[in-house]
Length: 600
Ligand SMILES: Cc1cc2nc3c(=O)[nH]c(=O)nc-3n(C[C@H](O)[C@H](O)[C@H](O)COP(=O)(O)OP(=O)(O)OC[C@H]3O[C@@H](n4cnc5c(N)ncnc54)[C@H](O)[C@@H]3O)c2cc1C
Picture 1 (cartoon, helix red, strand yellow):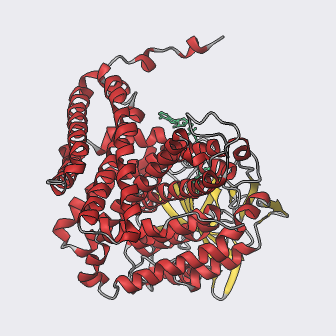
Picture 2 (tube, rainbow, N blue to C red):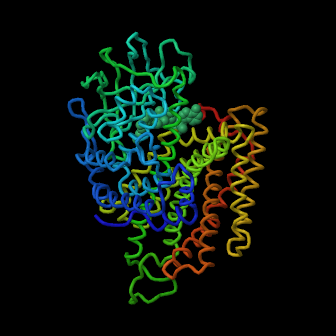
Picture 3 (tube, rainbow, N blue to C red):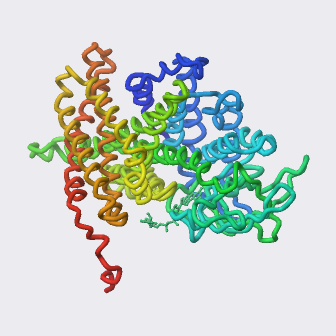
């Protein structure tokens, strides 16, 4: 199997031309890095992706994990991949040096994540989860727990997980019932069941460390009574590893993303499961949000990466598949043309490119806000925290929802062959379907955005976003070719601001249920505008590069960027028109519809 799954040229365009990533190295926190070291990191990620991840893309799908004698068996390469992630410093790449990390900017880590996930999404999940769990331990756990559990996680020998979901508590985490009973021995005795836990058990690691949400006996009801625990599969007792009464009851059979297991886990069947409290009691959900926010960006990256791989597979096919003739050519004796010559195929390719490169840009923007925080004094952190907080639902959801449409268009480009296993696009379509579901469904993200984030701190985050968007408009001044895009974008921002004020203003009188009934549509609209913002940035950068006499070899790249930006503004941005209409309409149709009306 050979092929292109991501554009390194585009990643470098975003890193070095759209976002001035190298400027981060002026700050003391990132001063040990420079563009050369960034390029070396990108090349290393690409090498692993090409040599280790990509060759296993299909095989890991065809040989999914299974349960044997209480242990989940995964592809034998997983162990090797985990160790390489540890030895190569990938698990701790973005961690501070004081934690044994590389202090690599998140935006670089983000690019590397895109590269490896485009090659094989499942293969990268094991180490990403371990990295997130390790970060949580670093931030909030006691020194004793850090010493006992972190070194082997950082080395890629032990798996980390996030264990939140329970059969009766999926989206509704306030209904978690896994119970922790205090002992006088410094640990809690745990009892409960968790479902859908990614990499919850497998033979590619020697131990599994669960970062688990549970409820201490007698804790208040709801989210105010949730605590965070570290629960190992094998607990460290002196030099010994002792089984901790964590049992796998099921490994689920999934439609895609089959290279990684999701498990049902049972804790404390024999009353012998020890859980160690992380941080303070009843503050667990707040701590877990650190991992969840990172994971939400990670989901956006995964979706984008899969859509990228599907785009390049379909692009390759469209360049070589002869079918039909140009309209107007009536002579059947003339040779057929490659299907990329047909306007409808180009439309589908442009759609995919617009989704992929727009999403990549938004995700890097979020990573850059996080990095900028590390470079600025404490009193300036709030601005970047708020922007990141506000944009996270879009950065998770736009790529997740659009990757489904984008990979579907990739299949469409291949016609009947796209529907068959001989080509990778059907797997990409299956693999990306998970993303609107895990780490908070699209519905939950919509309510988080409209119910909390746009109104938090009197709309401060929202105002900051508008300022950022207007700063981009200012950068476009004087560029005639992007002038029409600017006018359209300005109008979209105005609609968004008016609509948001109208919705938020009527929230109290109309009640929460009506206010949030179409929150998903609001999220969809905001997502399209956030991506339009990123396309405007890319168009401005490309036009300036062309005006500055870009190298001949780069002319096509920048021209292609401008056409794709124009595509987004012509075909995608106008979709907000319908959304604004629906959202201002105010008729609470879905609220007034009775459940019984669905009968028969
Ligand atoms: C492949 C995979 C990997 C996963 N990995 C992990 C993991 O590592 N750790 C972990 O803890 N969990 C994990 N999960 C669980 C995942 O996060 C949950 O599936 C998700 O949170 C949704 O919960 P649910 O499946 O119970 O669906 P439900 O919560 O029952 O939701 C069903 C539908 O109802 C909607 N809905 C629910 N409540 C509301 C509401 N109040 N208002 C409006 N709509 C609502 C949802 O948006 C959704 O469309 C994973 C799941 C999968 C499939």
